[in-house]
Image 1 (cartoon, rainbow, N blue to C red):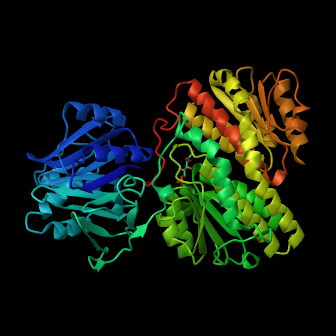
Image 2 (cartoon, rainbow, N blue to C red; image 1 turned 90 degrees about the vertical axis):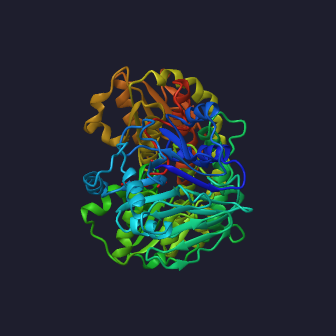
Length: 604
Ligand code: F6R
């Protein structure tokens, strides 16, 4: 939810902290702050709102320091004011925090009873007070450990202590924290991206670890306080790159990156020599009772698409559930099932909890993730990475299609393993999959037509999306994209469900976007479209040349390429994403950082 960074440097850190925070802004962007050891002890600068406000503060009042910490916030406790912006402090302690301190209420009451005065509405501040108390009679490491023993919740922290200008301490319980190894400099950060400009030598902390860094080294301890070693890895450049080239927004770039991302992803799950699927991890699909997919938001919709693909092709039952509901309703599970966690970040708290819930029931586990160093990736039996590169835009696009690519390959592999298709059909489907990236690029050529539709759509207060079969999850995803970046209310419906209630919403001011490329269900969807048209509802039809023949002159039609229905969810994703994108751009919305959102949601 929030992004944190710490640098024990040999040269000025102000600009480097800001550079890191820019890279972490995808995690939250409602206020920001930094602190550093200066000639006057520990000083901090903070500002409400976007990072540029903090930069303006620093322009007038620079922070001269070579060791410091920084934070970009997504508010959980207390509004996003300057007063609630991190770093927070008490006595000798100044710290930044990502996550939630669950027992902060009782700790705060206890500290207040002992005379502590609190300056903020945050849960974070109790940790600063507690640690300051513990420092009275303990070393920094002992005091940190004693403090951590008292707090409950899911959090990552980076701490500086007045009088200890050469060290920073950090910990993670739940949310990630990495250690970066530089040349005579050391770093702590929420992810590899945060320290990307400074180093690509990274150690991923394990859950419960705490760490003390100075200029040259990191001492890591596990939750029990025992010294441990965490391997230093050289991460791929793609994990630390963050460029949007000639594009206006990361989202626009990431939409156009999709053919390449899907091509790389599909290539990782098929053997191009034999033309067969090649799924790493040794899962025996023939022996599985069922698959349970858990995910949130866009990742959940990718999972829903997986259900359509896998059940139809492989006859293997697939349950898909929103992770935040899953574990609280005591689902009936059995150990013969496989759980697949879908998550771009691999850190989403709800998905992680649902995954662990299944693991505790004895199920084998897999994760389809983008962040291969993430908690989910490290906790599952099998990692199925997507290979689309770091996704920066808060609205997920290329991760979605890469996730769908993995699930498409799994559907073919499972169908083959379960004897539902023969080797020839497997090879045909692999060939079809390999064509998807080219067709996605072709579908993105609808961009100009879509841009022209945006002004009209931007005037709508409500928008409906309709689809049938695999186009239904795509309708849900299209509606989510429009909601989150353009703030227009939108709902996705299964086309056949419309007449059971939602059709009452149709009027001249409510556009309906119908996603219906040619497939065996197209005619049925088009019949539902006629029901909308008969009630005066404006229609935008997204289809191929064949489908376009069914449009009436008053409909707006976006014509994408003809494709095998098996890959239509991939091919028709770019137009749906572009539609939301251009509506948001037309409305002047902050596309890459929509209000109230954060990319990585590491709280429940
Ligand atoms: C929507 C979006 C979110 C995420 C969701 C899960 O555009 O990005 O709905 O898909 O928060 O995030 P991950 O995939 O990181 O678990």
